[in-house]
Length: 80
Image (cartoon, rainbow, N blue to C red; front, side, top):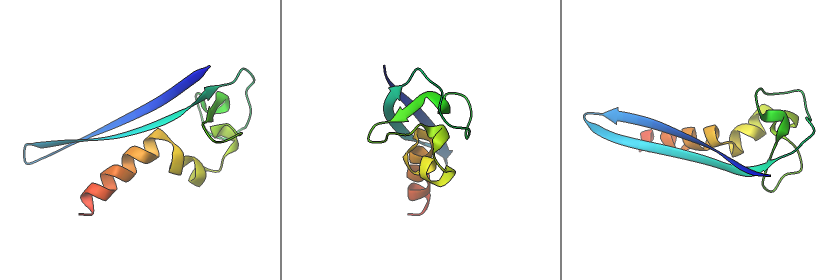
């Protein structure tokens, strides 16, 4: 079963709205694997990986997750 998760962060500065989006594509597996994370982490395997989010270290997950991607886009924008 295919799945994707999406995060959108809205920032409004001086009446200028900006949206920062992160998407993580993957699949849902039937058996739960891993002890880390929460929610769907034990059943979600991102594309290109053979481990669930719950089997990954937080740093690795943050680099590829929808939330991590959205926050990276926000940080890049604010760093300009």
